[in-house]
Image (cartoon, rainbow, N blue to C red; front, side, top):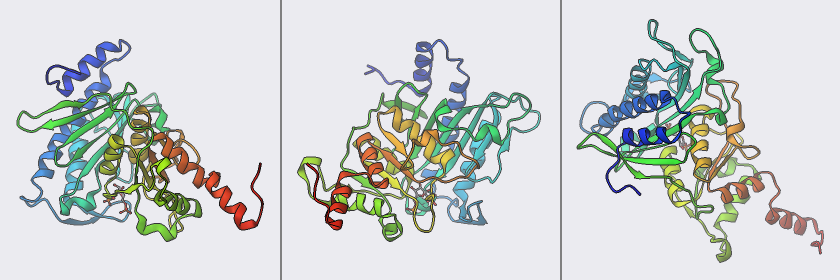
Length: 351
Ligand code: AFP
């Protein structure tokens, strides 16, 4: 542990020195994201005081009502990031198409996909919300970046992170060398290292899911949730249910305490609700880097190569043992299900 307060920029400097191959270019982008999020934080904490709450009246590409803070967060990230000279193209939850670097600005070799204000339906209730970001190397070689640059598998990310605006504001990121958390100290305007090298427990005792969707789920998901509620001291069940409805907040809590977050596909939405590029993939990289796991029920989230900017995916995310167990239910392979089927069909137990 460090014997003195370490700021984000000092920490990034130290990390860069440990990795001589690092060019420092995406460190600069990360610092700019951190800066934009300070600006967003300033508005979020004042949201109850100034006239930034309420709907703009417009709808975003998903047909959801856009709130003024969503727009502010989107524009702030765009303005700050498009001037870094390090980016080739950007993509945001709030924009249907990719966002080119403004004409006249230098074009760099990185791509940033971001969700400017995740969980925004919680804004009016003063509940935690967050910004999620994902950084990729560009693939195209010439000119401005394109959609192809944005549509890459999550395992190609060079950096992923989030800022959670809450009782204290935190920035958590990984560049593939551990997961590190910083708490924002508003009086000095700095993010200070508070959670170096976060490791998530192998197994937790929390499940996080919108259980209002229960009747729409597949049998595998229903059985998994029923299983987590059963009493079994050996496996620490029943689990506790915790659900904010703000992905960053639900993920952050489970990262620290252990547990599993689920947003499965269901009868109405086969791919669930959450987006691959700027929700699932960055959090999957953080989860894996912290010793956890992230799956769509059949494969690692990080292996998905999206075909469109706002593609959705079922998401099972958190402690590695919990995610593996959840997958076995989703795939109908869990011994608990096999035993139940055997009893129902009158087949005697093996051995
Ligand atoms: P909003 O941004 O519309 O509040 O959605 C938040 C979110 O994308 C994610 O942060 C939550 O985990 C998830 O949706 C909650 O969805 P439900 O309200 O369907 O549970």
